[in-house]
Image 1 (cartoon, helix red, strand yellow):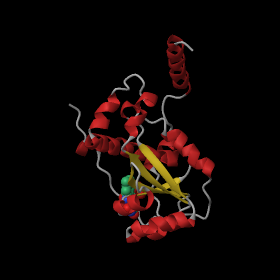
Image 2 (image 1 turned 180 degrees about the vertical axis):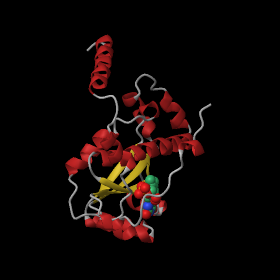
Image 3 (image 1 turned 90 degrees about the vertical axis):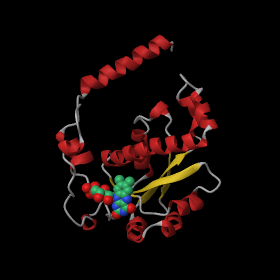
Image 4 (image 1 turned 120 degrees about the horizontal axis):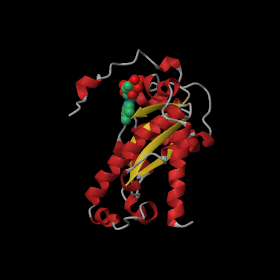
Length: 217
Ligand SMILES: Cc1cc2nc3c(=O)[nH]c(=O)nc-3n(C[C@H](O)[C@H](O)[C@H](O)COP(=O)(O)O)c2cc1C
């Protein structure tokens, strides 16, 4: 396909989806934001590999700077895999993680820049800045992968599952156990399953109102 035809096709796709949907309805907003909770206990109901792929196949389309996509996900399903994670978890996170159908280690790859030609062919030279400055690459990778981690939580909800995000763990231990001699490092963890109500110990906690934290200037 010529460049011109590819651009016309891209514009047509945008026009097509906008003609089908203009915004999420109230139910979708409740599912993803207003009523969904961080879950701490799980129904005995499996999560399939197909569902994990379904989650990723949404997440991958959410934007990252220069389309870098530095997030790397390691899904732990087997008991053995989860037991390798257990020593790194803070006390209150152990049991719920062992009981979760799947635990995702959301990591970030500091060598994401190697794929600039593939994912940002319009400016492949941007890779050089990261290649030559590992500190810049690391903070960029962490920032962009954290964004992707947030998208991940929303995608879990979008496919009808529940998530339990966790920062309460020893990052060094996880890196040593799962990412030794690798350019990937752990960011945060996310249990995935069908949440059980007994894990919800109280009502929704307060959130800031718009006027407290936002300004329009
Ligand atoms: C990145 C991240 C890390 C979190 N770490 C933990 C954790 O280690 N342990 C835990 O019990 N909850 C953890 N949480 C859950 C939050 O405490 C919870 O989402 C917040 O209190 C709001 O609760 P709600 O989503 O049910 O309204 C984490 C949430 C996020 C997004």
